[in-house]
Length: 308
Image 1 (cartoon, rainbow, N blue to C red):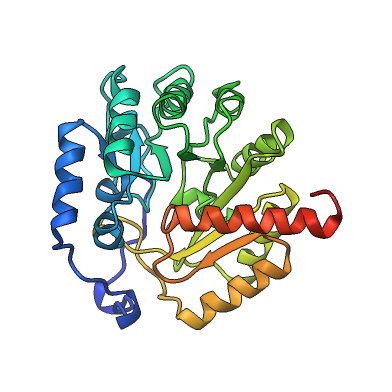
Image 2 (image 1 turned 135 degrees about the vertical axis):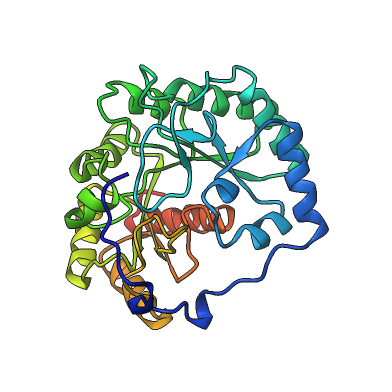
């Protein structure tokens, strides 16, 4: 993990009331957890300690994390374990599709750890998962949230050609903070990835997200918005960074809800079809509902331009 400045915890901001959530206790939560264990599946909900896990699992929504639960990188914001991953599970696509059917999902989000150890970064496993879901549950829409596939030529193209409904790749933070927050990644490589998706298949919705509270400035966030719009990204998510453990990057600031509202207004003015900005917003939070709204916004845009 990149070196992170250790601050006196007494000087750090206290968690405000708008960021607190209830602990998960519902029966449905237990059912989803048992299903994941039975199918040997992982979710980013658990591995990344998502604050929305109780709400999402109660509604039988989950973000599947393929290619294991061990990442080859050590980002300063992420709670997923770092180390040497196990071999790719050939049964994972089938088990994932079975879980989608068992949960009755209409929209599924698939993400993964970084697998720099694999020749294609794990792209083919994404393809297999998409194909298996299309075969077993043809009415389900598919959203992928992929790593950056740095130095993995052809990986992004392979996934785009499998035609997910939404291709998401998060920039995570502003360029100035990459060295400490996301040291294994490159800002302009990630931006180029999103642009490449649109160039290869303009019909696929593209999506990206950033965290705030890491020490960024407003002008830097606005510049990221401009960069994403230049890459023709359709959907932007902005959420509050929460420090998973004392070893991770500290929260420099808790951004108030009204500031998120101002970011959302600015993003819409810059031309994003969809914006989700709030303290608890995460990449796949309410993803199914957002996808339906995103599709409706695209149709309205086409009608307005006379191309519908």
